[in-house]
Image (cartoon, rainbow over all chains, first blue to last red; front, side, top):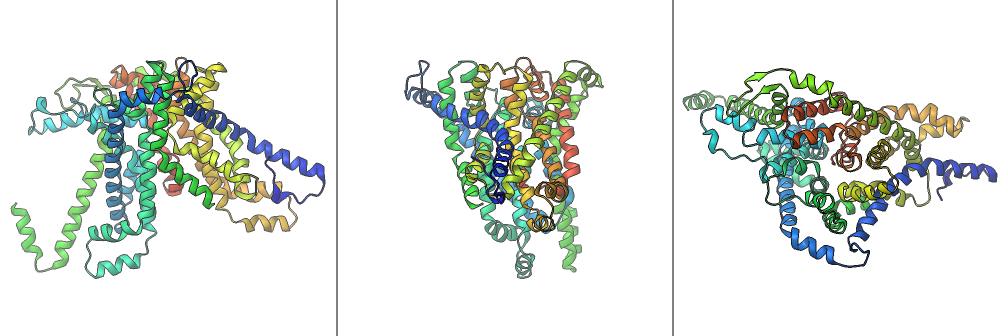
Length: 286
Length: 284
């Protein structure tokens, strides 16, 4: 199927067959791996979510999953939305500040999370925020707090949010900063000369002018948070509500209910639709 | 309190002075905030990795030492470490081999059903990996690949290929076609043009992309946990296991070791980092 039509200048048939073969050899291996181990299993999870153990078509998986996990679904979306708002706010403020006062040190610091693996972020937050973790020890050592009355946030909601924000700040900052750097300095100087402070420059000029990039960053970050498995796997073991991916893992590994796991998977696909649409549009544009 | 009043009094005659003090305070606050936010969790890892004895409510460990570093580097961890690096090298090599020609084709030639091809390589970025990999695991069971090196390498390759096609296509697209046209007009063949003109210009981008692929494979957790267990324990899985067993020191040492390649890469690549490369990277 793949054919180098642009290169088909050679009228010689054996020559064009050779080109055609070369194209197939270049394209096929990588494409087949991605189709075989991503697209095919992806379809498999769609089909599997509508089937029970004896391969009959049914909606039971969805009834079961929604009944058992509707609170977890709301919890997951809430956690991701809160983290998303925090990440975007923090990234916009920092990017704005960095746009006005180029500061390589701060910029470098906030790029570090990009290269720290998710599992490590989860573990670091765990030792940092646990009831007897580093942060509480630090607070206790100031003598202002009673060490035994302090809350440990690691295994709760706040720990999850902190870890998700921490991991995603690098990428979001990079994206938003790219947009802010594209803003013509003369606009900012004009506003500055008519008396606008730094905060107003960020809030009333940079953010509105870069809204497109910020919303793309938001969509990509949100889907990455929804689909993240490593961070809640490291942190979320304290009872109460769980993230969706943990429920999925539990259904598959401990209850061995592939149908329910797939139904949870399909729900997570629906939550990721924003990113899918973004990528489809991107392909349509090119 | 009094310092603030004094500052204000001293500042009133010269408006520029309060401004610069304010700016300095602002900068100081941002520095303190950034360092606390970013280094706080990381420094906890560092402290834990050197703690031989640490009981609550001591602020710092009672006994420091290299015991866990030594233990970890001798034992099973060393195995996981070399395994992870081996897999990452293999994945990177296969990615370069497959993706350089493929990305060049996508960037330069009109291929039938090109948008379909692009979608195949873009959509995996959009969806969560875990539900897909659980189904891929079923397929791999059929081929007896679960718990094998081949299986883990393949599951790493899925994400790595997608990432590297995306970055390499943008590398090739950023090279002006006119350079290649000039070479072809002067009588060079297409293959020769690719190797003498395009490839040398694209090399820095290809190297950057490959380093990121290497890091992706080294850090990959979800696929390794599902496909690798119980026989193939990569570093992230090893770390997960020891953290779940409350071996805080072992997990912290592993975590730090996992961070080092990334930090080195960040120092090397600060300048070349483009957001479009990185968007593909923030997943796990």
